[in-house]
Image (cartoon, rainbow, N blue to C red; front, side):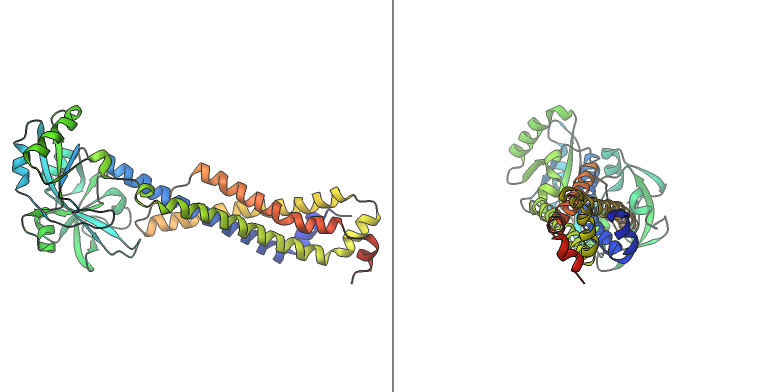
Length: 363
């Protein structure tokens, strides 16, 4: 008799396809959410590492994970430059605003020449923002159909013309001139924080202590600690991903269990014939488990393809970054295969315990 594995998949393609899709959805969900979380975290770390200043000088509470305010006087720039060990100081306004891509986006207001010099940033195309309605963007944002001369909407859908494209990525992807940002936020002479670059990076702790003594009452942070990863900013994200993984495993197991249960019910007579011919319990269980594993394996392939296509589409159409993780891919594979195997075990055991006489009489 033809193998149960091959015959059931061939004779019942629709049910098999539904089972494959069920497993694929669980795998795709794991890959999408973990890929987006890690992609955004790695992207934030990459852009933060390109900020060359060692010290952030700001006011307490002026900037949070998803909000900021321009409440620091730019007069502190001159005061900071007078402190021993300080090479340069650059004021920055960072502003968060609602965005359709991820609910929240950000833009910075900087004095382009001093910011570019401090952080080794250069224009690869176009020119710095000169007018109040001009911005410069990094190469990643430009790759999303925003060439020089195109219009980008910020704040309340206000259009800004792309004047230039810069590299490498550093801080927010879009930057206005400091004066333009101050005007837009009605905060003349104000900034969110001041980037401080030391003459000798190894002296940053001593310089920070000296700044605190000279300008008390402000907040001083080291750049390496100022830009946290997404996971550390949102501790609940790790818990959420673990819950998602567990749900994906349960979904995969239930889908396969339902498919195998229905299969066994419909093939009761065939199983009875196998048992009447001397098939052992182990053989019947192994055949059903093989079918479940084959369905799960096909679901894995489909799930990875779906996640890859969805990730590519998300990356090209939004500001989100999708990044495949080998560890999570392995986790998703284990979830899909283990869920399928466990889901099929009960139906397989039930089939192996069928009485041959009753099975042959089943209608």
